[in-house]
Image (cartoon, rainbow, N blue to C red; front, side, top):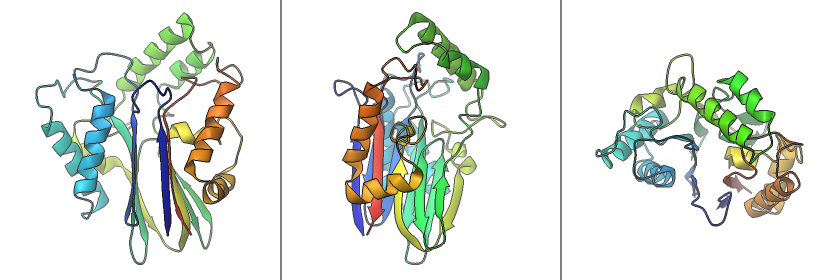
Length: 263
């Protein structure tokens, strides 16, 4: 198998709030959730995703929900001085893919996308519960250009609406401070996998909303040109629409991460 990965911050002068690991055995992509409010934590989102990723990599062999629950618990134990009960405590969406001899196992919590091209079909796997939350506030924010005062106010309202449903029944689930969230992840296994990709939502923009590629095209591009080329195409599309008027979105650019595993 050929394994390749790339991860770039939205702004090269800012910290990357994505995190990735890719080996012959394991692929992990974490996408830190943007903090638009106080979080009760002095460390920040980048520190959280790096700590959570390292904790996942340190104990990858148990059942995947157990892997994630243990990593969340160990990460929380690293900063007990912070207010981990704060409703906006740093959090991340998660995808873990583990390659076995007979099957590929996956865990998805939040809007990270796993693409798996198998001998029977192409699987597009994600967890859409975040997008199904705060829909009225989300649509309202889409009406304003990026960078405007109206957009900033609308995004703050959206964030508060999201936080009211984060890690609660009927809402959505992400990795934060409570290991119980891992039990709500989307899990499964696939056989006959020929090639596979894991994308943070910043990289998946190339399909939606930008429409520059379809999912098979993403895999073809990753196989032929690699993850860096995919992210460069995302950046090129973002640059043509900095105010988000053609493709409404929350940020002009987003941290973008892509992992590819294939022949």
